[in-house]
Length: 111
Image (tube, rainbow, N blue to C red):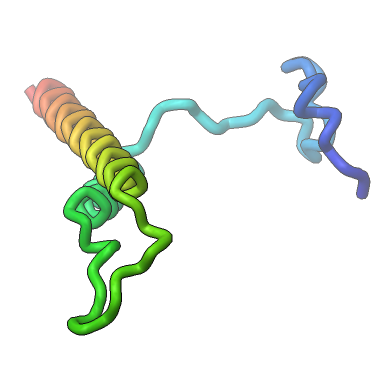
């Protein structure tokens, strides 16, 4: 079995799916799933909170400060943590919106 790196740069056409044994097109959709959005939101919120709070730089009591950790590095890590936290909140809002849209669509079907 050869490498498929050429498929990245020259993707096969829809009429010729290539290595697909049943000669059908991909059935994957680009629509995000609710579970994926929810889990990624929770992970981003948790990791962003951890980084933004500065807990990553906490040391044991009595330990000398690490000379390699400068104020600029701490500021950069905390800023990145805030950015990841914001993305997590954004994804959480998208997940909530998707959930309520799906619920409304199901209710509309039942009527």
